[in-house]
View 1 (cartoon, rainbow, N blue to C red):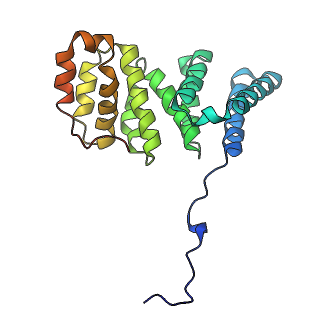
View 2: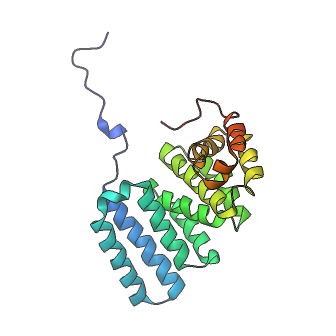
View 3: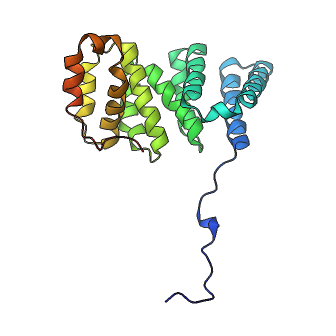
Length: 207
């Protein structure tokens, strides 16, 4: 029996959700450190950080949007060379905030068609992340790879991922296939999409 004077377990056992202000501040610090490292110009780094803060506060609600996070990653990938933004992706992925980690995952997605090691990182490392939200971004990052590489040329990789032993790797493909049926290549070759979809278990979907 439960004693009458028993107290409810303390909520301190649960990890407190980060405030959006902390996430913005943390990302701003990443931007400043990386801009300073690459430019060696404190004024430029400070200006870029202030611009990041202003845009973040103007679009604070959009920070919860995967498309907005994807857009932020695209800006970074367009602003730096491949050799520069892969280390940026690595640093962002190590953040304590999953929203910042997601930017890193997208950056790996933009690099993956040009760097096999980036695609390998998505498959071997990101797929083990415990957050299903990050796994959603893995699926979007894999779609970026296929779109950049070309869906036809990506078929061997798609089939390889579908045979992977990790459920999250297979799920990244299954989520992609649900939208790939609208892509020109799969519209013109529906039998290929049907064949790939037939290999997917119905249970392999995100919450």
